[in-house]
Image 1: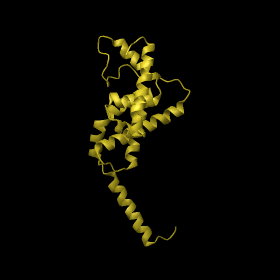
Image 2: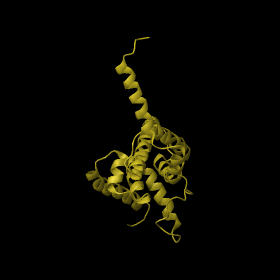
Image 3: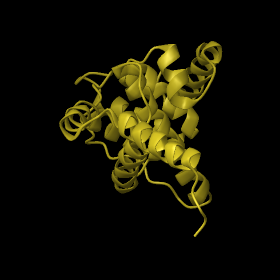
Image 4: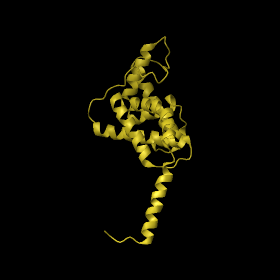
Length: 189
């Protein structure tokens, strides 16, 4: 064992106290944060990952990495954006690992996003789910965060690790791709 100097001991103490301060979230605060975010995060993961079982695994991993990061957050929005960024990165990693494997379309009974078509045309809701399943993962992420979550361009950029100025164009292109896929199902915009 090497001899520790006084400076080494002081540095170890400083590192330990920084780690304790960085947690900032006690168990009760984390439970409240989890209760506020888990349902919407799971819906996001299920839609973007296209596999409800994978979404459950990614949800657990997302919160684990969120807690392990021990980051200080400026606000609740910053904390939430960080959570979605971790989740988005995990989904991308999962897609890279599974590239070439057949994908599943998310089940129709999600129940977490209002049906934009309404009860008069339920087949359009199924077409929308199929079309979303055929989009690239980033397009699904963008559309979900913008329209299902109601996130601002800045929040989307923070969640996906993109520049805020590019979100408007990326959303435009994703909407256009979705519209093209829906037209293929016989729907007009």
